[in-house]
Length: 501
Image (cartoon, rainbow, N blue to C red; front, side, top):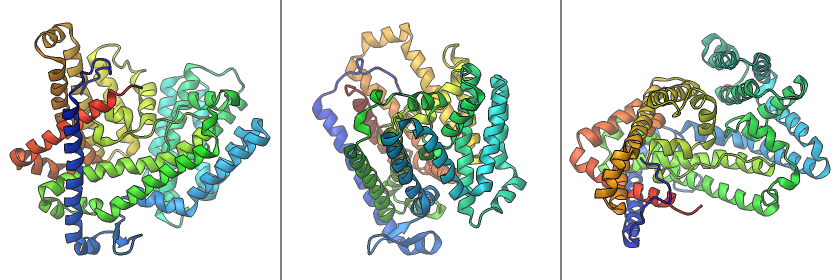
């Protein structure tokens, strides 16, 4: 809820911090245990109605209801894992034997790898998008480039075109892979277009087009990100080898990072073997009869699985990018130590956050021209994210809740930063009490943040039932204890942020 710097954050007694850690970890483990019990008690019904299959471990079922995890896991086994490994091999070999050929080799490899999965027709769609975006960018009109790229992204939602593209593939999963590729490439094309409009390159058109192809078809980031800007990509790819971090290209780095990714994958799989949170959230009857602790466990399990999932989905591509001299965005931060909407956006998907700041928020004025411009810039950034994800009803509610949360936090920050309020607080409140008040306000912000994430992950019905059960029916016996535990979470988050860099 606050952006107080690390130097300003008052320390608390160690015993108090220890109590927050014990209560935070204990509430997580006990609520997960209650959700596990509920999952096992209703396993037969869930197996009949939802996607429970034989687990990887004998005696356990596996919940396949999370579309993203099932989708990317299957594609990884089919081809993506092997093509990513191939990218790493090509990159390493060219770096050793012919460094000047490394970027062209990776570009050609990325194009061939995309063609092997999406087919010639699918890649042709991307080539048309690249060509149109590149051509319009030569006019150096940012507004025109925005219109062009938004129109290209909108083609994902034209029904006749969707049916034509579906006809190119044997399965729905192959079509969805094309959709994801076009959506992510759309962000890269916007980045290139605006960078070219703001700072036209001195090199010729052919060289620019070559770098755009390299940026667009860079294989580790091609299907699902994370996102880096065109400027960062080209600058980092052209750095001399002696300026790069040698520790990130060696065997030890590869083994350690691969081991971490495998552990994250095992944790994600363990979660969907012992807690059927995705199947439960899909049925309103189960949501209505969940015991209070299991209800809290469901909320925590959904957001924690989302976090672990993206550690895996971003972890392997980021590792390969680091070995290619790139500086990928930081991996998501644990959601249990997120205590504000602003922090969630800044630290969960850092690449998308920086993209939104650079290409939407700052060009529209941001916080430089007062609160009104800040509200407008933030609103348009969230509006774009909503449309980019598909523009469905639940996404509109999610975007609106996030916009409202960020605006409220920014307004409170401005109020408490004013000289008048600041002087009153300093005269009458000790630094330790001030920190506890910040954590208390953050508990309310975290509650709304979790609610918005539940709408994003489960849909409007999940958010509605949680709101009714927690804040309407259970305001005294569920909401108040929940806020107390969220206060502990916020204190842990504040303590985590106070660590020295």
